[in-house]
Image 1 (cartoon, rainbow, N blue to C red):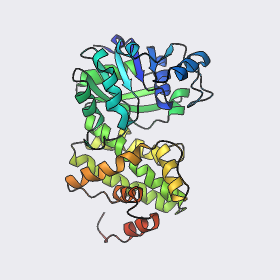
Image 2: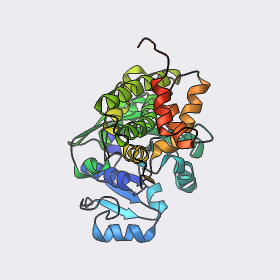
Image 3: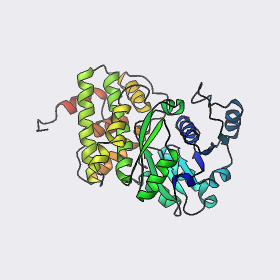
Length: 327
């Protein structure tokens, strides 16, 4: 199947990221069906031609059709799954009986399922046995992508030809997609960087300085490399867009939900006010690292703080008091 065969793209999830990807697919010349479960919200979006709740001020492309009928998603040639990681299995369960075999389902969530320790491609394979799982990941803020600002990401599928065709179908002059067969590497980068972004936000919220922030990102990337190697990721994937690239973006400032969540924690505020995937991923990532004997001190400190086992000052002290070692 060539990129031109994916004429009609379904986007499952009408938040900021789903809306942004719908606009991006439209710019690539596709017809787009954007699904959300709230019929009233989708009718408002269709009338206003704007996602006023999540992306105010950014017009919805004319070829994007906001809907609340899942049957319209099932009729598409490929589906972008853009719901939070912990909700993916439930969402796919609703799609299940409607979907035809052989449809590519591209996970755009960045996390690991709690309880099962399943990556999103595995969740897709289990919930929709007839689907062709793929992953889209990389440094991309929804507002940038929605507005058509230059962005580059990774699209990974185990079948290299499928990955290439999907990248061709979704790429445009403003969204460059690099294709890969390293599904696990793309997933690991996306999940782990969210946890590390919370740590970076805590450093900012505690006003620990630029030197501490740089050290945090560097040492966090080292543990991302270790974790990736233990779970079969290719080094070039972890050092590429979906690993290092996404880590740099997500730790760069409050436009990142995970960074904003961490900064609120560091500043002693009640909460970040927005969903942070890393808060759900931290504990399972640490569990999986322990199962492979991988040292992830930064992620473990985030998990301990979120679970209430350590205060922020205690976590910082514990990290700084670790035994001296060679880099």
